[in-house]
Length: 279
Ligand code: SF4
Image (tube, rainbow, N blue to C red; front, side):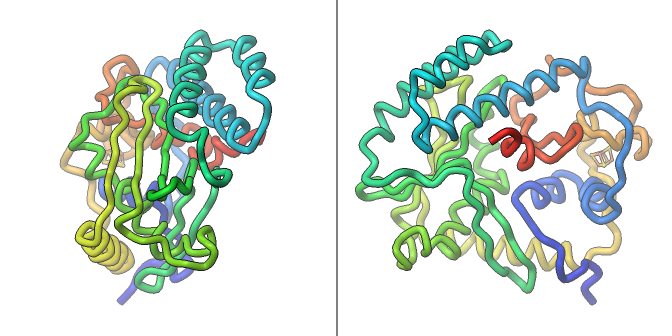
């Protein structure tokens, strides 16, 4: 019997939390338990990193919707973050080399939804662009370090985004389904702008993703246990660690593994909401 409310909405973010730790998913999305702990120490470093990421996403969004580059560059120059000007210049170089010749303006900050296994599945994209022979999904990543590729393969984002584009993106393509083999997903890293991670989508991957996501949603919807993760590394940067008796000291920001993604954090609000602030 399903134990999860039928109006529950899945996203890559809450699915990722479930895969990382079932207890975290339960506390965060079902019990809505706020817990007064910080995710990393010192707190200002993670706050600054989140703000820098938000500023970068806002700049790129504004540029892609047509705001003049020179005006945006002025705001970058006045930024409190010394890293932002070089991030911006790297983005502009990438834009000139890859996106400047787009046949139509890209879609930015766009949300697609579908129904899978009776539940709503939502994906919010940084950017979707139609190139001559490819449909390109880009996710701008502002991690301190570029994550290792094998860890990116397993991220829920890598499955949800291309899957959703095919099943729910036809309205972006004049009502025609977007061909699976034309879909390409790219993680572009401010930390390593010349070394993005690219997924060339194909039918086998699509089939695997559909089965995986459908089974995962089914499993969650029937779950009434939600055990703590066995991987205690995940607890170091989790707000619930004292609640779970997994230590009461936050992990040190500078010791974060490269696969700890600041975008997964939820200091006060969800990351999806952060990137919308002040747009
Ligand atoms: S502290 Fe650890 S076990 Fe508890 S919710 Fe967080 S990741 Fe899961």
